[in-house]
Length: 400
Image (cartoon, rainbow, N blue to C red):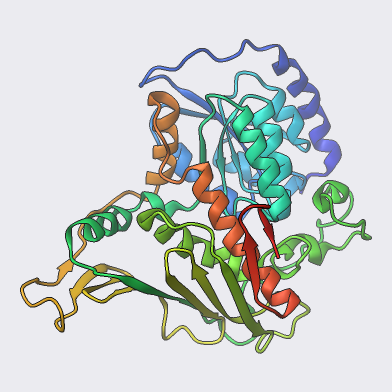
């Protein structure tokens, strides 16, 4: 495994790219030059999505851990690699940047990429805090003509198409509840999210100061680095990992706004492995549209799986492996059940991002949807940590 010193020559070569001419206006079939900040496990997955799209040149990767750069080169052998993302952003020939860093670093990398004139595919959850969300919004509004796609990929799924169609064409009546759940299980001794600490995870191969972001300085800790999802400094727990996807799907389909109030209860009932974020939780969100959204999640049993049920007094939409409309027979006698059938490729969300860069139009998960979803998720985390219900002050745009 190479050390930081092995990548210093790459940094030097990257300086020359700052002289490249800025990209011109793209046509529908022009090739896009793409880089990534944060090619970890998730970052490598979305790299594959991008490479699967036509007319894409994947040219650069930046990460603070040398192993990740080597893994990125295994996927795209001709890329340039950087330990400092600023060198990647200095390359004026790069059109678009994928950002898949830990959640507490999203704001830093997002605002820097926009300032460098890049289009952005920003992994979820978009913003770590309300302050970050506002700062990202200001940067986005100031970056005219830049496309931003938030990585809630289900917004580009066939189920999203079917959900919108069902809501428009089938009688639902007054929708008062959305019940959502997300349950997982793992073998004994293999905690959810836990990653091994490898011998090369040391201060020579990881830029620890850059990883900490705007958190208080701590001594180097390889476990905190690789298992960042365990800790509040860097993570919103499963709210930010999975609730965000389910919330964003229905926020988009039903054009829902930031909740009026949110409460979250739960705890560390199963995995006593030093993590801070809960493994069992229940969230209740009161929507301004006169609707309650609930989300239950746990890591100790997967029987209930991942489901969402939209409940109206005239009909129900159930979303799991399939999406299905069922009429409420007490009020609707003449409608049949319907099952969604629209199919999309795994890289559909990434393709939508590139299509919007070339052709214009709003991406399937635009910035404002990512903003509303981020605030809803932060409200849940704040409720849990403060052990009380929290409310959204829409005038001041603050959690109170």
